[in-house]
Image (cartoon, rainbow over the protein chains, first blue to last red):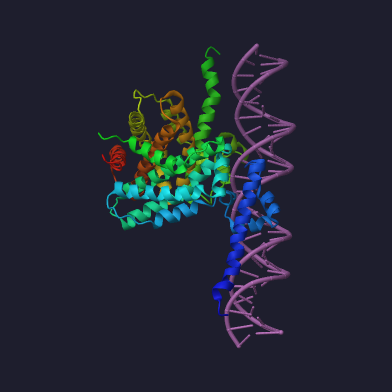
Length: 201
Length: 201
DNA sequence: AAAATCATGTCACGGTCTGACACCTTTGGT
DNA sequence: ACCAAAGGTGTCAGACCGTGACATGATTTT
């Protein structure tokens, strides 16, 4: 009994294992037979559990396929900025995204999802929908602790997610086409082009 | 029979009428009982048609609730720009949005949807998903007929839709709170704040 | 008026997702 | 070691969304 954390960890570990297993099976199946043709029944069968249990781990089919957005949300919402103006905060958030992008790109799941995104345009719509959570969480966090107006906070949140999405989508296409390139440089180029959309008057 | 165009118009007119009727019923029901509680069956019953027929007019429940995005897509994709650089094209597109925003705001459906958006956050996610079509159509149109790189075209399309969404969301909140304000000025302020996110270095 | 076209209703089906219940395992305490 | 509470799982039932096939009646064309 001296180790409560360990006993508690058993279930958590099992849960984490299950989460990974279900997502892995989902990715396998979508790669094999496409998104539309892949049902919850297929996923459950491959993992060896019941359909009902799949929904106990992921709230929806979409979530099982791409649960990764949560880490982006957490990282950005928790990141503090030293700046007080909207433009400075935006710069800091983009820098955080840059780091996280480099980390994500190193994971095989991220690359598998990226390749799938090119084949299945529906997945981009799923991403866009999920990233609403990011915009809401980030903008409300900004408005609550910063000197930003609601409209500024919304814009910052929208622009950050837009940059992430563009960099990701571009990376996905290159990955799909087999082009080798530095993902961080790709992200930097995205931010550079974004800035050049608003030239000094 | 001397007027063929009139006979052709009967079905089209009936169809347009049906489209309006179904959307109206959907708005009514969502206002009354919320989005989750409103089913296709409810909508069909209120209009006096079968559930199957509802899907012959709108591909989904979401589409029946907010079919308006299509006009935004068509307008932006068809708009030509005199400029060759990305920033100029972006400016032109934002100007087109500004005009369209003024027109939309004048329609009662747009205002009803706006008020509902505040009550039903799910609708914002639906909008975000639908606007994927805009980003795809607009960016591919830009890349096809303009001197923009794929990454530039994507960024321009994303930024335009982000600005539209922020202005709309802000308008919706004001509308919901009963604040009277000039919508066009609101849109202009959004664009102004957007520009100030990227100060002259 | 006859034929082709279109709109609608009905029926049937597969798929997503949720709630309720029973069963078994893990957990924490004695 | 035993027990009770809590958590995970399967089964069952059900609501809802969306699609295909077919028959029927109205519209349009010839």
